[in-house]
Image 1 (cartoon, rainbow, N blue to C red):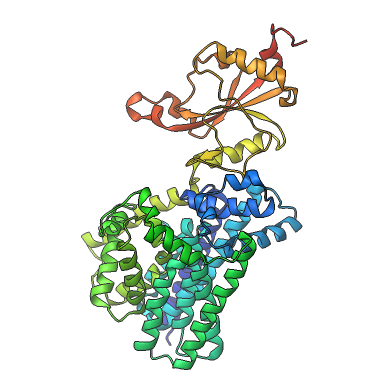
Image 2: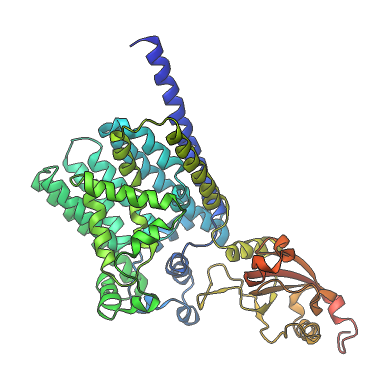
Length: 510
C-alpha cells in the first residue's frame, strides 16, 4: 500500500470517527432536551404504568388509559424502567424528571449498540455504501430524536435492528448466535408485537435466501417464543392475573375496531405520511423504499419492511409512528443505494445534494434541540422554579391533563384545582385572595399555573398583584401580530402572586 493510499485511509477513518462522535453527542443532547412525548401513548402506556406499579391505588387506577383496563399493553418495558430507576436512585437520581432522562439515555444506549451492529454488517457486506449509511445513521434528521424516545415503537425498533445486524454481520450461524438473535427479536416483539411482521419477513429470508440450517433457525424461533413467555410473567405481575396482551389487542383493535375511533385513512396513507415528514426529505425516503422493493427484491431489508407496510396498510387506523420500528434499519437501505449509484456528484447535482444536506441539518436541529412537548417542558421548568412540595393554584385548563388523561408521573400531589377563577374579571383577584386565605399552606408567594389558548392579556386583573415568571411559548410571541396566530397557540404560563398583596384589605386576613 502506498503512502498516499494510507493517508487517504487515515483521513477517511478520522471522518468516520468524527461522525460517530457527533452522532453520539446528538443522541445524548436529544435525551436531555427531548422532554415530553411524541404521542400520548409514549407517556400514558409507559410512565403512567410505571407510576401505578410504584404506587398502586384505586384512584390511580381510574386515571390509567383504556388499554390498561382491556389488558392490551405488555409490562416488560415498564419493569425494565423500574429496574433502571432503582439503579438510578442508588446514585441520587430519584425524581421523576431525572429518572425520565435516565430512561431516555437507556434508549440512546440501546440505539447506539444496535446502530453499531448494523453498521458493522454494512461495512462487511456493502463497503461501497458504508459512508452514506454512517452519515444517515449519525446525522439523519430524525435519528437522534427517535433514539431518545421511550415509545414501544422506537425501543422495539432498536432491538430488531440489533438482531438484523447480528444476522448479517458475517456468515457464521452458530447455536449461540441463533439464541442471541432469538432473544433480541423476542424482546422486540414482546415490547411491540407488530414487529412480528418484520420478524416473520426476516425469518423467511433466512430460510429461503440465506439458507440458514433448520435446527439453528428453530432454536432462534424457540428462543423468541421463550421471551414471550417471560413477558407473560411480567404481564401477570402487572395486571394481577394471567392475560394474553396480543390477543386482547387483536380483539379490541381488529375485531371490535376500536382503533378506528381515533381516525381512519386509505391504504396508501403511509406513503403520504412519510412523504410529508420533513419535506422534501420524506419524499426521498418514499423513493428509497420504492427503489429497494423494485431493484432489491431479495434483500433482507425488503423482506422486512414490505410485510410491515402491507400489514399496517390493511388496518384502517394509521399513524406514522407505527412505522418507527423501520427507521433504525434505514441506513441499510441507504447503503444499498449508495453502493450502486453511479451518479457523478458534480455541477447542479452537487448543489442539490448540498441543499438537501443543509435542510437535513435544519430539521436535525429542530428535532434534537427543541423539547417535543412545550407543555411538559414548562412543567419541568416549573418544578425547578418552585421546590417540589410547594402547593399551587391552577387557572383555566388543568396543566396536568393531556388527551383527557391526568399526568400523575410528573404531577405534584399538592395542586389545588381552582377552575372557578373567573377570566377577564375583577373577581379573579378576589377569588384567588379567598383561596389564599383558606389555604395558608400555599405559602408567602402563591404559584398560579394558567393553561389556555393564547397568553393572559397584560391588562388581566391578576397582573395588578402578580408577575409573569415564564411561559411554555417564547414571550416574544405575546407581541406578535394577530396574523401570525400566536393567540391560537396553547400556552402555559406561571404567575407568582405575593400573598400579602393579595390579602391587602381582605376581611379576615389578619
